[in-house]
Image (tube, rainbow, N blue to C red):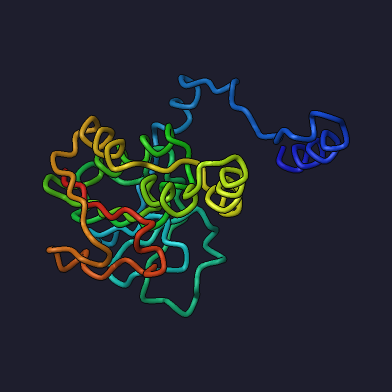
Length: 225
């Protein structure tokens, strides 16, 4: 499908008027009932009694944490044998039981998924957190994106912002603080605390953020179940 879209995009760009449009996949055929039947029953992964989970870890593997991402295990750093990694689809039901993690962490992940998928992700994090468990998130916030990329109100600036803030990095949606708080509280999180880069009153979450160059762009928040 992806290769077909690329091919069609090249053809359309040769046609006047149509060349200004982007060709993207649509999911109008999505069947919620069928998808539920396929994904609701999952086999739980061995957590090795670990109660901390690092979502969408990329290459930032944390010792003493369960590290999960969409990459195949073959791409996992073999030299980091002390770390545990699983390939997990984070926008469907997570392969973990209810109330099993004390801490969760996700850095620069939310902006890569659509809003509907991010709500599923946040809800699954909530389900698998223990009561009073904490989820720390770091992501480019809408406030920071507007300030950095939309600093001049004109058409050319907005097109450049679309390229630099969205398309280059495959970013799909930026949460504002108000929006994230609304969604989190609706799911059931009882505390939404916005914090600073690398700062947490909980030792397990302190100094986890790695991207100092995104201070001022990113939003940092801790959600308590």
